[in-house]
Image 1 (tube, helix red, strand yellow):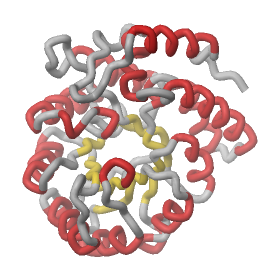
Image 2 (image 1 turned 45 degrees about the vertical axis):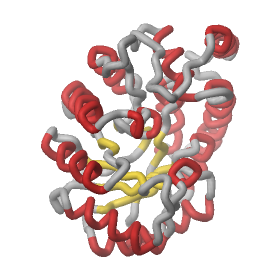
Image 3 (image 1 turned 30 degrees about the horizontal axis):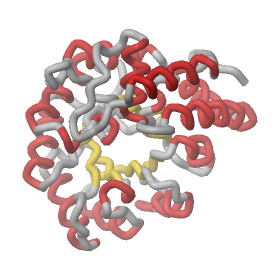
Image 4 (image 1 turned 180 degrees about the horizontal axis):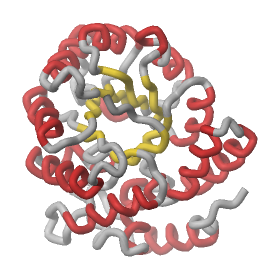
Length: 301
């Protein structure tokens, strides 16, 4: 069973000017991430504008990344959707195309009880083979519903293929609590990038980072230092990524990623799926100028 670790990249979903999935750009983006030393790909996540894509569009994006990756790195498809039926459909599709596993965000918009969350995740996990890994995904600032140790423990007990969680709220206490699930064998990956080194130092498995698409070398270097337990170096590298990320995420991080990726020739347009917003021309110009001033392509300690 494949497991997530290191630098997991929730890739953007490139769109054509007429608002279709840009398959060729997505292929280039897949290669861009793999060639940059990043360890896993995670299409159709929050960074991929997941909830604003149709089920069929999400299937196309997942198929494109899985096929282009060609087992060079693991691909875990995010399948959480607006309702259980769509989530299960996407989960089964991920199995059928040869993905290595799935991530599943908590139900969104409406508040769900712990029992409701357990029932939801159990249904999704049992819809795929027992040896197909499932990661729960908590991002309460977006999805309303949170993940806690009790929910994770109960779902993991009922479903052996539920092996970990991506937790995207900056709460170190909660992150460490989740690491104790299943007698400490539950994988925990952090969403907030500034906690990458800190979470790994206390037992986390890695980071899920959209920023890593842009500053690939920096994240590969942080992960290498962490694996070598060179935390002095990891701290210096982490602080550098924090500065770069603050610039990228100052206004609209997903739109910013697309601006930089287009400038580098990886994707063809900066188009966002409405109602998501593009940066204005002035904002684009300022972003690119500030990133160049920071010499963002180079790892500087």
